[in-house]
Image (cartoon, rainbow, N blue to C red):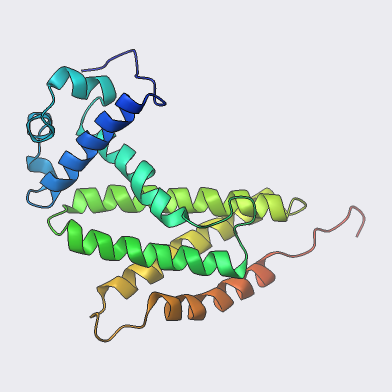
Length: 204
């Protein structure tokens, strides 16, 4: 079902309703597989009717996308200056936030299906890549666009992969997020220095 008129996202009532829907969906994900959850399950759990749900979302996939973008991505970028986000301190904050996200997912959404994990991973990698590319374009405006795109992809996948691997280690054996960040950031800095070369002038 598709509703052509979308609610005003600045309306406090709309914000509260969407939060109610998302909270109900998250609570269901803790006890059921994603494939088993229906729109009716969400509406019953949120104590709203189906018309209200479809005013906000076309289906549970759109709901999941919105949750990833509005909740998890905010978690990743919290405390980071959007205009100057590739400094040492902000990169360390980004790594710690990714560790926090992985821990949250492991503890709160244990029954999350492979499908949901794949959707979440794809969304976060994409958001990370776009964010890093935006920062690189701002800080290195004279560099080749294709080169910056490759760097953004490498960095975003490295950040996600290394923090995901960290989350799979036993809590008693693994280092703290801050220690992990302290190891990763110098490698990222070296990658930036190696990958970003002065642009050749015509005739060189």
